[in-house]
Image (cartoon, rainbow, N blue to C red; front, side):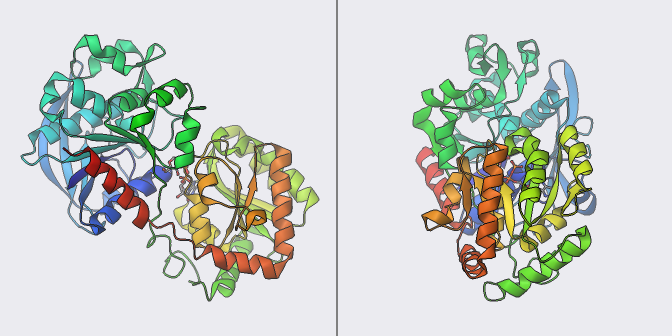
Length: 466
Ligand code: ADP
Ligand code: GLC
């Protein structure tokens, strides 16, 4: 079975969040179980593209409305990723040192059109096209509706929704940018009077998946305006829990750690990482270390962080360290909060520091209001760090509270009081060092590698391929 994943992000080439981690690892595991699963993504100006050789395998022009644009398909020469990587090179739109920007409608339309033009030219077509999020949500529409791609309409399509908050809206005035289609079917593009790339993907893909079963259910109640669509399309929707790359996220071999550790050397391994972190960030190593890693956006509850951290630090003898960036007002407030003795933050993006925090932290905070899956809590488990989470979406599917014979701290709802109460419960657990260490060890035995979920995708693909 030959499957192409089409995505805006893929680790280690270009990463903004968990989408990259998933697209960068799922195909590797699918290859392991005998599939020919590969990735198509935009060619950005990233450190990875500067340091790796690509070979041009296809060249053409695409039409974006009246605009004629040159593009190439580049194939990564080395095979170290464990799957083939194809990059769509549209120099004037995509080759930038960022992934997302304000002209994404044109950028990702060009990406999708170039990808389909290339697929059209292939002698051996893929057996299935797997698209991810709204950036590739128009592909199922174009494959089924655009006259140019008629010959692709029998290839099954899957769209995976990693985050339905972002939908790729644009005005119908730009519909001429989409390769021509029967205007009677323009309704397939529409939601509430605008073109909605995610809604079009949900309507036109053969199957829709979300990255955890609970999130699938939640979307019928709360989906940034698409609730009725998810209820209506229920029969073709399925929640499949994300896995994590067991080799990249492995405390025994992780090259970013100062001291590697296994289940048996967990205590000393974590101690070394914690010591390094506390030295670097001026924190007291004897206090329990609470951390946050991620995008500073409303979905993650980050607007409450300044108030939460201040109250939690006042009421508990703990330290807090944050790694993240996003909302500018929150960033400024967090910078100000650095004057507190037991708080520090690195405002920015740092892959190596994230690994060191998963290893050195005692607790990882995830008070998300929306969390389709969440990979951070799974990384925390793998590194023996206890997650403190709001029990929604994928967090509900992966974290069980200690009071229910589990291994994490769960709260129900996102308010300053609820998050601080959860931190207090975690602190109490930490003070019972025997219980804390037992749980920490237990975490490392929980298997969230892709092995199980990769097979679930294969079962889905098989059910779609005629
Ligand atoms: P989301 O995709 O919604 O941001 P996930 O939990 O699925 O959330 O994945 C986030 C990924 O991005 C994880 O790999 C996390 O370690 C990484 N990450 C987020 N922010 C940062 C940051 N500032 N520095 C380093 N890694 C980060
Ligand atoms: C999204 C979600 C996150 C999920 C990730 C990977 O960015 O916000 O919850 O883990 O995609 O699927």
